[in-house]
Length: 235
View 1 (spheres, rainbow, N blue to C red):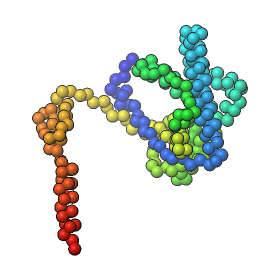
View 2 (spheres, rainbow, N blue to C red; view 1 turned 45 degrees about the vertical axis):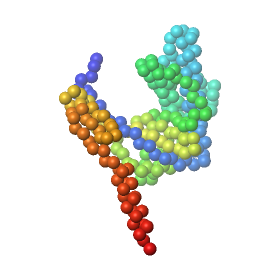
View 3 (cartoon, helix red, strand yellow; view 1 turned 60 degrees about the vertical axis):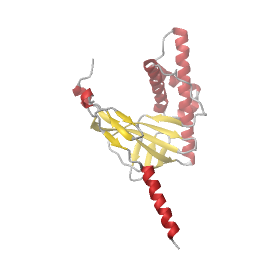
View 4 (cartoon, helix red, strand yellow; view 1 turned 30 degrees about the vertical axis):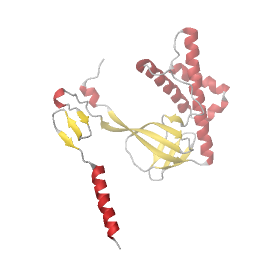
């Protein structure tokens, strides 16, 4: 069933906000465990998908992978120190990667490496933002100091905690602001203009209008010449 104009107007806008984090030494260790655990689960899930397809010619679902994570935790007990929803978020990311692969014919999903410059893990829910105290509370990690330079309103969606190659920590928060998404506008030949950027004229429009070249460099050189002359006249 397709979506009509009325249904499209009811969609809300999603905005992303990125903030710098300043975790303590203990929190950094917990973040590293989350990054390592989520990377491990992603690679394990990808291997499971490949193995299942080779053996049965069918794909294993995200739901079945999430059920297997419980058994996986019994074998890899250190995974219990990682937020379970973050682990399940990796199977969701993998499912999205396969969807993109089949729909857009992009590259087959790759195994994640420790050598990737930016390491990250998802936080689907149960995190909170304290604007007044500049604190973001993250499951299994605790209250982390942050530079919240911008306030926002709306429903908190999935967040992503990342570590850069220089050792800096950030969190990107997706927020549903309860504002209606703009209506998609249709384009016609009557309201479409082509633009040809040139050297003599800055731009020539398809309707015949010409925009003159401001010639900033030429004007700046002329100004510089005058200033040099004034400088030589000074005693």
